Length: 280
Ligand code: 8YV
Image 1: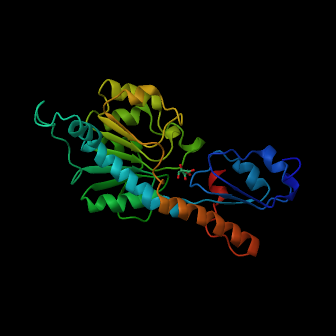
Image 2 (image 1 turned 180 degrees about the horizontal axis):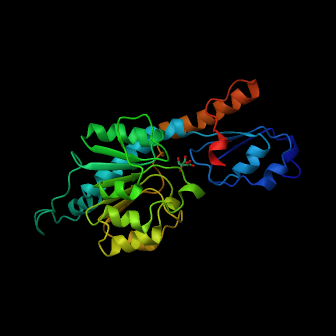
Image 3 (image 1 turned 120 degrees about the vertical axis):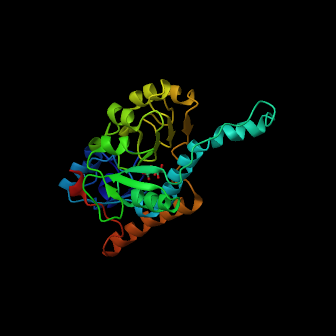
């Protein structure tokens, strides 16, 4: 950094790699950090804002596939896709009793935690399944779904709860033991946001003793080595932080990062700038 930093005007990176104050100090001419991910909780936002360095991200490119993955996880958990697949492969179909009946999602309630672009994409898909949709957000949004200012009450009134908020200190542990308890023994918790949003020890305890029905997780407190107790639970469906992992979306994310850099160097308005003041 000491050698090359002074020549850098832009940084292209992923949100999972820290951008620290010390790194920024080594780049006195830096004008933009173009992030290839939606999340950027590893970045020192105060240090970026203090220097007026622009930040761009790619949530606009991935919300469709992440919303699809949330619905996929909800259906996979509710319809026992993983154990059904194992059941057919085992050759035991029709020999060891019937495969158990599952729970429908049509007409059931869905609580969405976070009504940004991803939350809205999840809601419009869930509406197609005839689900009753409520949401929690820091403030109400101009959407046709019912707003619940109290997250615990939303969980209590939801059969399924999907997390779609940004990570970072503001949402750390938002899905607390109390919220998990409110979702209850028939409830399903789906997380396509960040592992840090859930109190994971409380989640594991509730899943283990039946106080929470099931969980379907794309993200974990520890990646890529999630708590092994999660993999040991039959009421958990696991996905390897891959909600945006399609050829089309990863291409679109990379292209959006490049488009932002092009705009910056051409002196045009950035395509997807992040309003840093929202994160200070
Ligand atoms: C990917 C994500 O895991 O964009 C994000 O914030 O968490 C995911 O889309 C990641 O960006 C790929 O590196």
